[in-house]
Image (cartoon, rainbow, N blue to C red; front, side):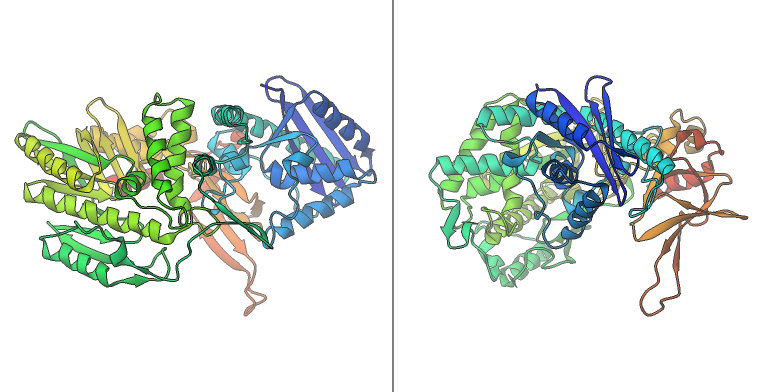
Length: 613
């Protein structure tokens, strides 16, 4: 592994700073271009030293922001803080119309770049996450935001503050680098194995690219070439008749499921996302909802527990989306039947590799990433009919399984996209298995069985399930081991709620004696075009746009202040945050001095526990 250096730049109209730190050793660098100091030559020499030693530089959004600015500096011997600030503004302004405009391609870079922002797919709108949010999630003692508004002309004292902030961001990025090390090593291994650069690919992109490589090896043409250059081969659709997405073996006995089946046969859609909503059937006392994304159904606010007479059984389709495509011969029209052959081969290869191995993980990404890409208008897999065949057919197959299970006495607890959870009598286990074995034979799909000893279900998206070995599955509002892009605020609420529902613990006693005060912390982030105000009886204070706090006895009220609307240009708009409660702001953990308002946290725990039957 080459030596790696974490770096970050800050740009203001009259000040440019660059901070860096070795990922493994306490070696740091600090550069400045300002009216008081000009480190231009030192920066160039430093980068050339990195280059000569084949080092890699690590950053957070460095491919999209930091490196283009640094590259501009390296190419221009007349660089000033003002020219670098102008470059920064050009990059920011280009995001709305051409975010690739300032991209420096790998072959042109002076130093190799590893971008944690891209690796974790934070450049996806649904997963967008900033470094400040990560500092909160990593529970750093200090969660610092920019010390001065963008565009401020700084004095010498402010420049020193900026440099401290710059170094802090580098330290935070270094910490996230170590959290991300396994993901980086995975990409490094793929790069060596395939002779292709995977270093800054997110998981979805890795999967798509591996599948594309295998299709090309099989002789499938993925691109068309013409006057406009290379374009992905695709099969766009102006409309899709859902009857073309329904397998011929689908049949129902229940009148409500029959109604849905017949209704779908009559539908023609022109878009695949949100084409129909609120389409439901109530069967066996449970309401099943259908959509272009899948089926879902669930009891609400109920606790189920296994005993000597009853058990909780969950059956999930193994690799639902890939399996439907492979077993039913579905493929994007422009890719032809060889697509299915390659899909099947990749699935077979994955089974042959040990779970957790590089090959197994890479092939898992290849199998799962293709379905989503089939509905991406920029992808070589694009054919929305293929997408709908999988989702429409899949949910009707699951509805059929639910109907069959109910006929032998299964109490369906929930159904969600790829599986069904049920409560059954222990003496009927073999009958239930016979039913789903028959279903497997008909659909050519395979089911995986899991038993739970207890389930507490708020709704289809939020529940706790306990396996016989004590392993806990958590979903939705009960999750507290979260992916990095999710807001890890007030984790104490989910942790205490779990103990209340699973163990029957007293919530207030738990809260009062909870050992980790970081679990009470919350994060608020407001956009740059607004500001956050802390209001007390005798003063107001402007707070950072990303602020850490906990609900406290005393403290300040949080208020979001937004610019006036055009129809009322003088009326600033104010919105209470955590309405009715005061908070202790503690971006610096040393400021966490006020007593916790335990009644607030009790209220939040009760929201997750008190309605259960």
